[in-house]
Length: 496
Image (cartoon, rainbow, N blue to C red):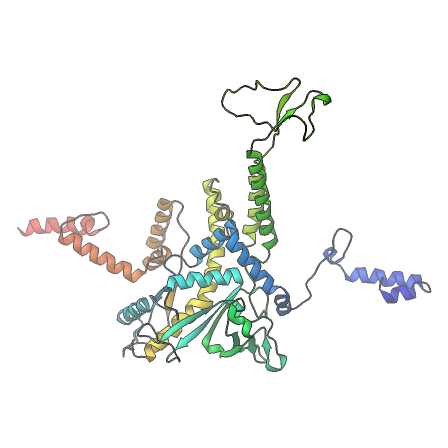
């Protein structure tokens, strides 16, 4: 009963009963009714307030586990491999001519300049583009977000490392203070927005809050939204800042780490062989300080105890460590971790002892999660970086637009990330071959599915076939020898 019901109850109990009955009728869902066994916990706070109160702690816990827990390190390593890959997100330019065909010369010009810029894309010049993308992807997933400042054109006290005046200054999300709020200026957690929630500026700290320089004061600078890339892992509509990927499994992972550490200590204690001497009768016991010194026995194969006192016996402290149930319990917990992190259990546990069908099903389902993260990374990071670079390359004269180019397709491109690996290459290859023959797929799609650039693949094949024919080398990969060579031979004989 609420306060009003308690006041009315002594005077009109029947009315109170009707009020309570009506209130329970409104709460039609059983899950909405708190009880002794169901507390019906809820989250009434806004997304921004939830991040305001918990964001810093979640981020720091995720970093600690990444630095100190092997399972978490392996989890993020595999996410890097499946989302970005060793060679980074490939970009295949697809500009069109006015006739609607792919402008191969302009695409090759873009590709060459992009490859050169990819050697030193960030401000310090220490990272290549694949390294930069993997590091930003890890920061995005582990910390919940990442920030980069775009250095375009002439920048005071900075010299660009290539012909294209464009570079990226990578920043951890700590530079964007969570506690910087000013309603009068529309600043929420360091992000300044207008009345339509469109970002106008980011207020960045000049020093990392965890560095020595931060002791001199919390100085910020406002940077326009057009000069910042903010990649965030958002879970709610209107969420201003990102949340770490591990937010729902942090407690489970921390407890797994502590439990495994306890089991390792117990196993070490058990491995240290411990023996004791059992006295026969109480009168044979020597108190400390009395006659008798601590005794030790050399242990070896086939040894005999021949110096025991009358009535003494040798006993051993036994232990049930290592715990035979540890692996099963741990693997069960890792399955729950995989469910909350868009990962695969086999990948996290490094356990591949299932059947082919089970492994195939797990790979297919986990690949959907990897693809989703990959597309988000392309939308948040790769596409803005590529388009800004191309705009600066054209503006600086490094890339020249041809006359016959359809300028509405200048920024058209295909972004290629790691694809699902093949479990059975024979079955996979046969399936792709059937799809291409039936017209449900094309050669370019097959090349992209295997992580290759279709144009580069065709050029490589063309050069290879020309060389083989010139040298008289015959391989089954060249269908010319199977079809056309046999037809040309009879024609040559008839001419003779």
